[in-house]
Figure 1: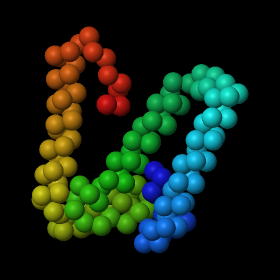
Figure 2: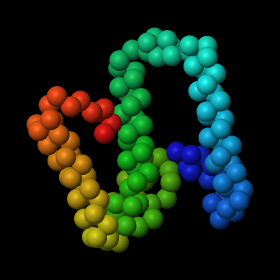
Figure 3: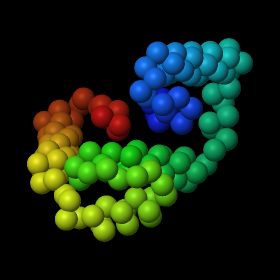
Figure 4: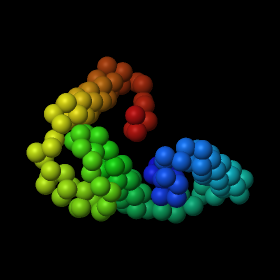
Length: 131
């Protein structure tokens, strides 16, 4: 997320400025987190309903997944709306890199398999859902 945000302002080839912008953004986020913790702003999350939080989480996962699409298909997918990115990937399916797709699919299957194995083998060990 930091790289995506910073690359809108500073081109990644300008390494020194890019690193400075990334560090500055991280520091700014840290200061905001500290200020919110100091005023105990965490109660505001309890004001949001479960469907709102579920929708936000689902949208975030969709955006993160689509941002990784170029790595899974093995060719450049230009940034844009979700529909445009999917449309571009489908239109260029002939350029698909089978090795990239295989590694992506194997990674996904192994993560899901290990999660299921963990639930069955270690039911007493509760890991966060994000893992």
